[in-house]
Image (cartoon, rainbow, N blue to C red; front, side, top):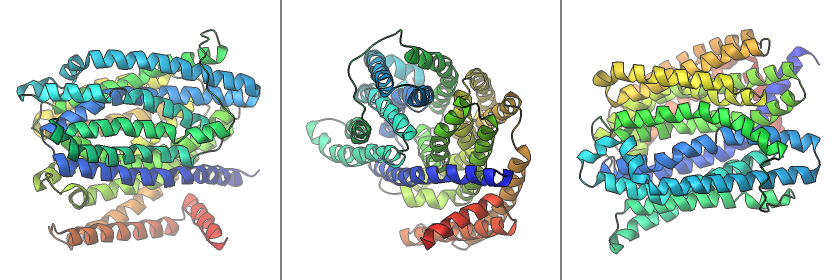
Length: 530
């Protein structure tokens, strides 16, 4: 196949798989924003919200470690190998063995976490002790939400398995069920539970737990449809389980550096002004929208493909798939970052400035969002490049990169915290993730004997130029609206900025002759004709 055709095939193959994920993730992110709106309206950015964010962050740190990190990637890698080279009975046995082992391990972790919740809260946010009752509230919320770790990790295993079988929409849609549970059950209980003598925020904690259960259950029918059954089985000598363990242990060590960074950031945020933890949380939640829509979607679509190519020794095709995924990620996240920077305040005011969320909270959250946006393209790129290392059975370099990032994060925060306060944490997060990606991309280039850097850089230059023109247009459109805070004015301001941005950016990519943009336009046109 000609090189150009192969590149085009890789781009469209990843894009087609990512399309289903993006549609589901888009819905999930919309519901996620509604969930944050409910939290903002009911609790603002004060004591209860700070306590909820830290309490949820404790099991969520472990969730990121197990559910969306080492465990999921390691399981997909080994399951793909079994699915192609082993009998259905051996594959199903592996599934039962892995689910049993994970259930036992995470159940123990949850019990220990519940018992030592207060100690974990004091370790993560010691400055909360200066506010009467804040430590006790955070501890109670942590105990309620800790089992979320078990539910969401099992859901992630199902998602990885279904992705390898070609199911992308329902597994990605499952996170929408989490948000629905949080909104409906959590929001409803938050309104009702105070009559029973409990703080309203307890309702949101219970809703979080219920949402995790829904995310697991929604995937069960497809799992059964594929012929899988889970029976209690624990065989520590099973070669498949041992291989997963071999992949997961160093990967957990590497990913633990990311969780250490989050822990450090939370600790520093608790030292800043009251509400800083909540401001950073709201800002990062907005960041999660494009990260999930583009970075996670492309990562989920890329992982099964690169796992197959690595298993077959097709390194050239793997390199091409990797670059195609990066080009698509950059083409989507660079303009998204520019748009978030330019429209941060009106977007936050439109989404969050209701109820107890004030104009001052909007200003502080907007400042954090701008600094987070600096690293948006790197966030998405890391989600693509790390699974490539897993597919190549190499977790050493992600570990090294992560721990260097921890040291770099601490240094940057210490140098900037006094001047920038909570903004320093957002800035440091972006700079360290950029370093992480650059480091891993250089090592990967040497490891696989090169990949099409020229194509990647050429596309990045065009994306940068198009984004700059887009940014200028959005800035001008934004300046026409002044500082009105009425809902209708904010809707018009954001809609105008987004529309101007999309039109300018798309037109510039076509003018600059970006091949991937033409491929996507051709695919969309063909789809519309059908």
